[in-house]
Each structure stands twice: as C-alpha cells, then as structure tokens.
Image 1 (tube, rainbow, N blue to C red):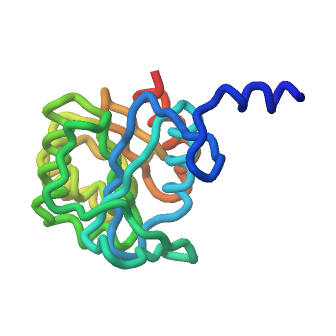
Image 2: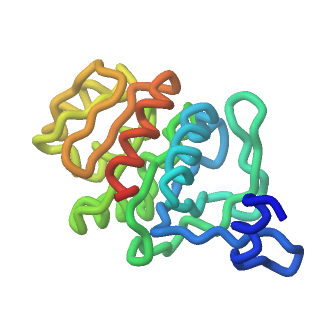
Length: 193
C-alpha cells in the first residue's frame, strides 16, 4: 500500500467513498444574483480551502443557477434572507457588476454590520465595496474598490485607496478581479490561523 493510500485509509469517507473534508471554520460568501466576479472568487475560495477554511454561499436567487460575468455558474447553498453570521468566521461580499444589486439589500447590510461588530473577517472587492460603505462599516478604515465608489466610501468616512488590496484589521478589500491572488492570501492570513 502506498503512503498516499495509507494516509487516506484513516480518513473519514462518505457514502460514495470520498474523503470527508474537515474545516477549522467556514466563511459565508454573499454572491450577487448575476454577473459576479469569477476570477477573484476562485482565488478566494482556493486560498481559504488551502488553510482548511470552508465556504458556504448565499444569494437572493437561491433556487436558480447564479451566472458569473464570463462562464461560471452554480447553485448557492441557501437564500440570503435571514442568514445569521453566528456560525461563520466571517463574510465575503463577492464583487462584479451584479454586486450593485445587493447594495441596498437589508440582509447584506445587516451581515456587514454583524461582522464588523463581532470583529470577524469582513471582505469585499470591486463593486461589492458599496455594500460596506452603505452599511456604515468603513469609517476610519483604509478601503480599495471600484474607482466609481470613491466618493461614496469617503462620504461614509473611509479612506479610499487605489492599491490592489487593502487590509485594515479584519477588513479586507480588493480593487478588482486582478487582485484575486493577493486578496485570497489576505483572507487566508486572517481566518486560516
């Protein structure tokens, strides 16, 4: 028996014989109902999985395929409405053009406030930074995101930056999709401990 098979033989298997993944914690992903940013989402999820942190996704369209800007599509785990952050180590608001559809969503705003008050991971990139500004959680914080949001962030008391990634305590923000790898590494550094 190879070393790989020996290591896997002690692992817990599901009904199909696949290894059951064990996570230190789980982060909530709030995904726009359409046109989400696929590239940065992939980096964020894989960076978290590499440090044994799982993800669970929610959206306003829980019963339908959520389609990304380019080609990705998937079904989220549950509806955004009424989700509590209690069981999660943080929340990530997924960027992309579709994120503007969540900017005034009361559940998205509540989750952002809940994460900030509980000092849990709070992250967003691109257009989803608007949710953080509207939730009132950027006051006194260094924030980056879509350049069109600069005035809104500054009006909410945030210090707008043009860096690819900004980390201010438990708050992680990314400029756009190109920030993917750096954004993912910043997330993993906070919740992967």
